[in-house]
Length: 62
Image 1 (cartoon, rainbow, N blue to C red):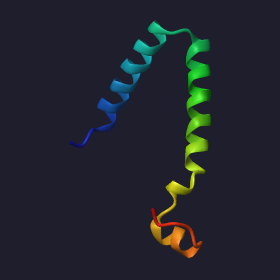
Image 2 (tube, helix red, strand yellow):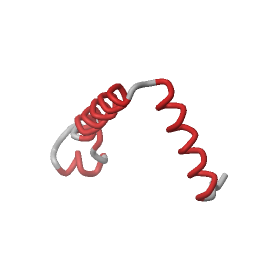
Image 3 (spheres, rainbow, N blue to C red):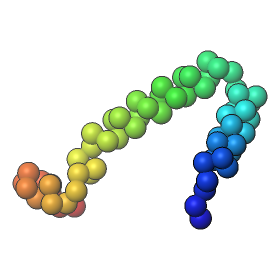
């Protein structure tokens, strides 16, 4: 299913409106910072490398 830009914008606006009505700005900000920090740490994991690169670096394929 392809979503057009207008529908995506409306959906995002509705989601943000609901989020802001449920939580305070501070809670949203802290949750966003924590999520970004966790994502950055997860990307730096060896498991994120493709198998061919792990083989080239003489790391385990598993």
